Length: 84
Image (cartoon, rainbow, N blue to C red; front, side, top):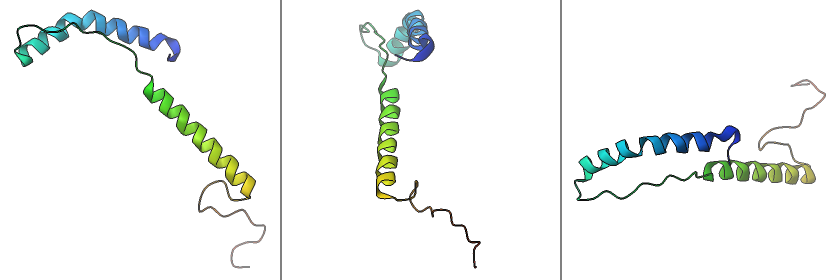
């Protein structure tokens, strides 16, 4: 569930607009009846973000264990100035 009750507020807003949305669908779909609309919070985006963070943490730990630089292609810092 998202922070600050955002899903509750959004769901409340959608529930409030349900009649309007159904009327708009009815005018576009031109069907005899319009099904009831139900709104549910989908946390897939937050789950995907969390999974990406975990994967990046695992990659960083793997690089650390292998003694590789933190990001691909970066060079470890040297104490000598370039060209010396």
